[in-house]
Length: 349
Image (cartoon, rainbow, N blue to C red; front, top):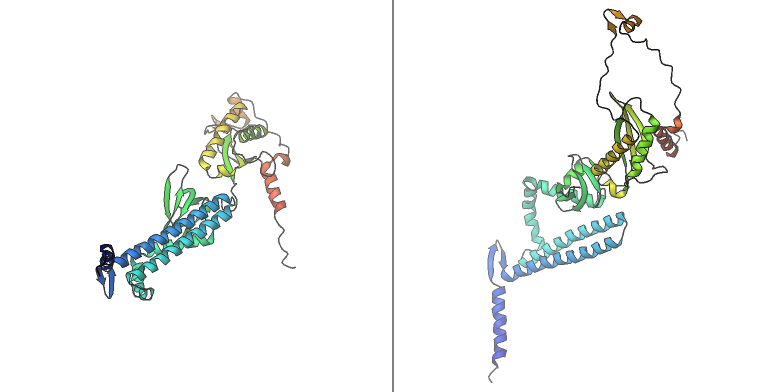
């Protein structure tokens, strides 16, 4: 009986494909790598990557629907951990297809350990530091941080080796994860997104403090980044010190969440309004100056020196009355913090 041509061609194609898949590419010890094994290994890695991408895509949509920052950080951490686990599983399956079972992987563990001891120590350190950041949750995507090196910006991504920080100038900086673990990091938005900003400025000696305060509060009200105009987080004006040429004041304001991550531009906005408000009230921002006091003239001193210069003898100023504490914002702020602080436990109890 004569078989049809199509029926006889199919087994031949299967045999040729088997021969092609079983073709040996190279041999490493007793492990023979074939074309089919390599193709299956690449397919396993691709499937693991695809599953990770789909899973992280679903978590990203869930994170966008959930507005809580803590939950978003938890979702991001779960996505990263699952991503690493799927890649490890895909790698182990790929090694099985190649012909290197997981039981034999211990042979390469020593080589990997030697490599970590020499050239991969920094990479391994950054990887472990990245896992610590994800689990510790002291640093989350969206936080505004300032590093000991002076780098500051918003955390955009926490990767396996480095964390990506985007500055307010839209510059992306890759910082090794170990720097966040071993160095000093200032997280401006770790516990709360609002923060207090102090804008220093100076006015000439002899200026009316109440007029200075009114001008500074007008400047704070003119800036849209001020969180509140009354209440415990209202703007305050502090007399911070007595400089060589001016009275040193500070405008103390609480910022909105959006302004917290842009300190340089926000401070410039307050300085702009401060200069305008001080000019409207006729208050002078002085230049550095020195006053020369002549203690003697032509061998004369005291009243005789003043008479020789044709100047009236200055009278001793009367003692100023005690200031009223009600208008001092710094005093009010300290008293409020003391009143709100919890009582210390009695050691004798």
